[in-house]
Length: 235
Picture 1 (cartoon, rainbow, N blue to C red):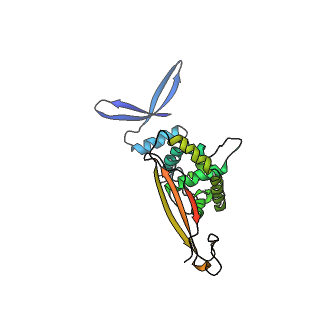
Picture 2 (picture 1 turned 90 degrees about the vertical axis):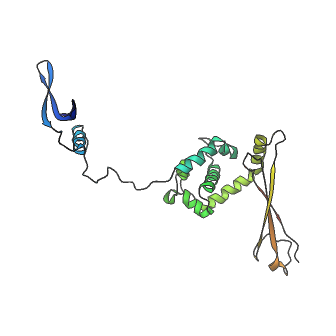
Picture 3 (picture 1 turned 180 degrees about the vertical axis):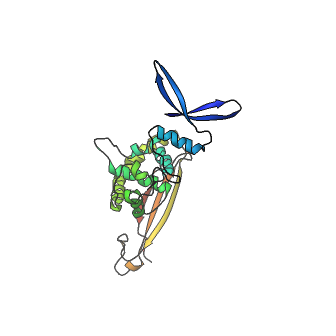
């Protein structure tokens, strides 16, 4: 059996339930029921049953969405990172030799652009159990711990000079104008190991300044920053 729609000149088409049968060497068809007065959704439901499908009651959904991770921003930012070759610049990766540290660094870069957060919050946003987006899935990170992110930053620090050199070769050519910026911050406290020059008597008043230097072309991203520490004189 099948449902056939038959044009009816200026009137609405006739919707007929028909079946085919063999008459000698000929194949003929006959009409079993006129469905023209049926609502369209009932006609489509019967059509689905005749094709071997299952019809659900009104209001029921064929499947339930248990979880849906945001993906649009991840696709845009991660796609840009890959298109400009930033991931390859950070370090090599092959099928035989996966580079988890590099993937974690890429995840932190993308996460910083999409939703800046602390390392603990970033780890939770990447972990499959508490993921805030599809970033962890796209990079196949699996479970992510906060300590892994700090270890990845140590790995990145060891490669900073090589990354800066590669960026300079790519962007700083032919008398390129470079924009240079210096920003400073300081920290105070009794337990900070930075003010090593302070004596015991003046340790409470000691502080340490951190200077961050970055440079960039007017039309390019800034180069990796450098941080230097200095202990100011104690008054």
